[in-house]
Image 1 (cartoon, rainbow, N blue to C red):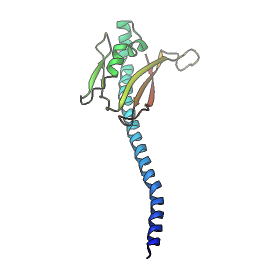
Image 2 (cartoon, rainbow, N blue to C red):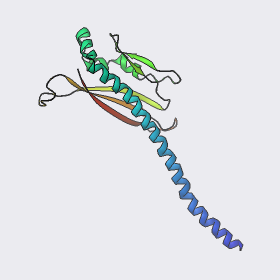
Image 3 (tube, helix red, strand yellow):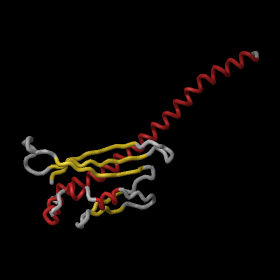
Image 4 (cartoon, helix red, strand yellow):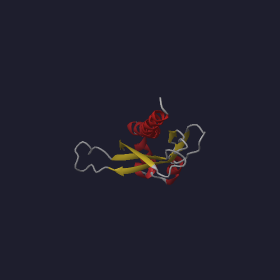
Length: 166
């Protein structure tokens, strides 16, 4: 082998390895993004399941009767929202209490890369739907946001909805 053949071989290999390294780096970023999306699903599911349980056991209706506050008023209360945003890393699960009641949601602390967790509530119009005219229905959306890394300037976001009957 001559020196020229060795140099040509090295040049061809370096041209082939560049895109391969870039592909691996991109794949790693996408894998990290998927991990946070799965975490967001779990955070939202824990809230949605508890809200569904409260609705099915008429707890929400009892709270409304006792306090005069509807589901939207309870879930969008600033005190509850502040408890939802509690992102103290390293602590175990904690209770986010509905203000003025003895009812709480058991919440997992958010991963340090998560930047927010909020509830949005919208009353569904049930006047035209015959299946919904038997009560008051709410679209409850759990919204989570996160950064892929501490230095990431872009917020990633996912929202998950559930329908609750009051």
